[in-house]
Amino acid sequence: MSNNNESVAINDAWIPELFKQKKTVFITQTPKKADAKPNLGDSSELWISNLFKGHDAHRVANDKMAILKDGRVTHEIMLGNLDTITIIGRHPNADIQLESYKLGMLHAGIIKNNQQYYLESLDTISGTLVNRKKLQAGQRVLLHDGYLVDIPGYQLRFELPNTLPSEQDELIELEALDDIPEFFYTPNLQPPPPCPLMTNLINDRDAISMWSEGITTLRVADIIEETHDVKTFRFVGETPLLFSYKPGQFVTFLLPINGNTVQRSYSISSSPSRPHVMEITVKRVTGGLVSNWLCDNVKLGDKITIRGPAGKFTCFEYPSGKMLFIGAGSGITPVMSMSRWIADTAADVDVKLLACFRSPNEIIFRKELEVLSARHKSFQVAITVTAGWQGNEFWTGFTGRISPHLIMMLAPDFMERHIFMCGPEPFMDSVKDALHGMGFDMSKFHIESFGSARTTGGNGVQSLQLSGTRHNVVFSKSGVTVETDENISLLSLAEAHGIEIDYSCRSGSCGACAVKCKGDIAENEECTIGKKEKEAGYVYACCTVAKGDLEIYA
Image 1 (tube, one colour):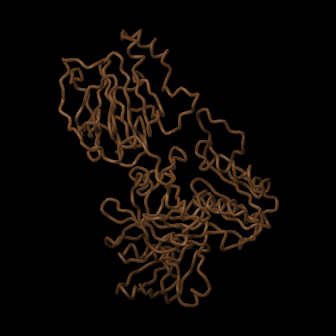
Image 2 (tube, rainbow, N blue to C red; image 1 turned 30 degrees about the vertical axis):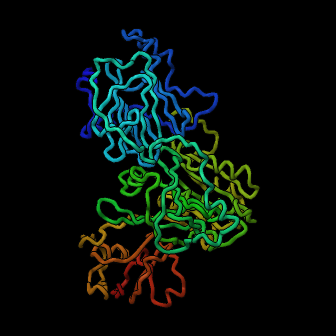
Image 3 (cartoon, rainbow, N blue to C red; image 1 turned 60 degrees about the vertical axis):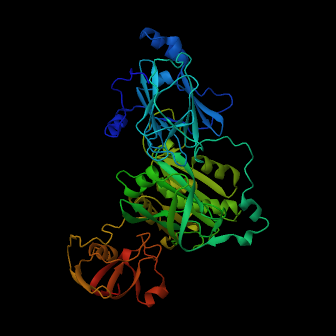
C-alpha cells in the first residue's frame, strides 16, 4: 500500500467530532429511476473546479463508485465530490447511510488523499471484503480500478481509470475466505422458494399460530424511513404468526438497554386487517433513551420481546357511524391504525381526519393519508402545519394550530361524532379546552397519551418533593409504609420506594397497573377504569392519588 496516506486516519475517538463538522448526509436508499442520473453532483462542475485547483481534472471527474443491491446498481457517486473522509454505515449521520442486516453503524470509511482513495474497515463484527478477501477492522487498502468491496447487503464497485496497481504499492495480507457469509452480497442464481405464508393463506391458514396476548419474541422484517427523524419498524413472528389486536391499541417493549430491561409502550400503527405483520412507528425524542436506542441500534433480523396488546383507545370500544380522528406528530400512529382498519374492511363509517405537524417534511404517512382521502369515499383528510420551514418543500394546505374554526370547517357536524385524539399533552389540552368551549359532549371524547417512563426501575428509594396535605400509604405485601401528598400518583410513589407495580401506558388506558386499594382516593378524568373493577376495590395506580390514608395490596 502506498505511503501517501500520511496522517489521514479514522479512529473512534474523533468520529463524533467528524460528524459535528459534516454539512451533508447522502442517503442512498431511494430507488433509482430508469431515466435518472444517480450522480451526486455535476461532473462538469467538478471538472472545472479541479482544473483551477491544479489537479488532473479529467482523472478526478471520472473517478466514481457504484453501489449495487441484489446485483443491480442503485447509485453512482462521483468520488471527487466526497469529503476527505466519507463514512458508510447505518448511523443517521453517516455520509452514505444504508440499511441492511449485519451492516455496522459505522461500517467503513473512504479516505481521499492526493487523488488516491483508500478503504478502511471500521466494523469489528461482520467485517468488509475487498475482492473477496477479508479486510480486518482498522486495516486500510489502496483502491484501484475495478476493485469490488463487499459489505453486508451491498457491493461497492470502483471505477478509477488512472489508478491501476503498481509494483511500488505495498501489498497487505488479506485473509482469503473459502465461503462468503450469507449476509454478504451473493448473486441469486435461482428464484427464491415460495413463501410458506402464501400457501398457508389458502391451504393451511389454521396451522398458523395466532398471537393475541402475552409475551412473545418478534423479528424485525423491515425498517421504513418515514421522515428524517421517524422510523417504522415492521415485525413478523420467529415462525409464521398472525397478529390479533384492536386497532389503536399498544404493545410494551422489553428492551435490553445498558444492562437493564427497559419497558416502553408504543402504539401499533399497523392494522389487524393485515395480520401477518405488526408495525410501530417511532419518532426520535431529544434525550430520549428508548426512541434513540431503537432508531440507532435495531437492525434487520434483530429479535425484540413485546408484551400486550393493551389499551382502550380504539374504535372497537366506542362504535359509531361518524368519527373524527385528531392526531399531532407521532400521535398519528394509533389514528392511522384505526384508519387502515376502517379502509381495509370497507366499514360503513364516515371519518374525518385532522392531523397537525410542525412542517411539511415532518408529516408522517403523508402519501398514505393522501391515498386514503382520494380512494375511500368515507374518508376526508385535512393536514395543518404550525411552524415555518426551510428548503424547497411546497405547501398549499392549512397552516396554524387546530382551532374551533378548523374543526368546524372540516366537520361541521362534529357534535354527532365520536372524537379520538392522540398527541403531545399540551396539544391535547388545547384541543380539549376548545371542545369544552364549543359545548361538545365529552363522553364521546377519547384520548391516548403516553407519559414519562419508569424513573427508578426498582433500584432504591428516590426523594419526592411533597407539598400540601400529607397521608400515609401502606404497601401491605411489601411491608412498607411511606408518606405521600395529594399530587403524586400511586405508581410514581411505588417506583420512588422501589416497589414493583406493573404498568404500560401510564395514562389510565390499559389497566396494567390495577391494584387493590382501601381508603379515600381521587382519579384523573382520563382514567378509564370500569365500574366492576371499582366495585371489586381496584384502582389504576398511574392515575390515582391519595385523599386520605391508604392501604395498597402491593
